[in-house]
Image (cartoon, rainbow, N blue to C red; front, side, top):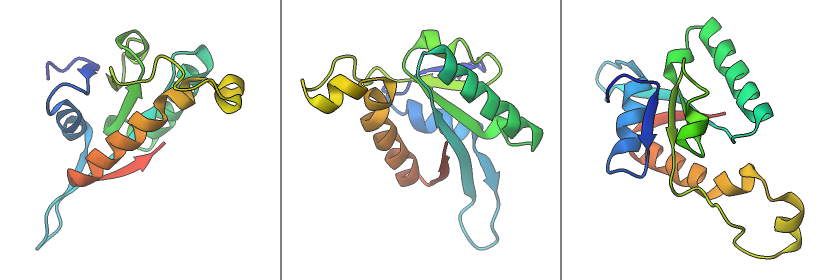
Length: 135
């Protein structure tokens, strides 16, 4: 990584694990594998979601954990709002409704678009040996 706040598309080979490793807090445990810990956020592009995520990141910084947060966004544009944080985006975020259902028609927003990828990436991180707090 080049040290910028935007770490790119996590669908690139090994990008998610490299991004997580770049922010993880590493704690050495005698006689065991080192613990790699991070806080994993997901945010949509709307103003309210970005502000709420920025607020949560600011609170983490007050307790010294801000540098251990990784933000998942829907696009590089949304990542640009997080100049002080580490942000990745995914080209796998759903852009179209998967079905014309009552639930999708009533509640289709970024939370539905993120549901699959957020769970998939969380699973990859845990499988990669990270301890993750999902925020």
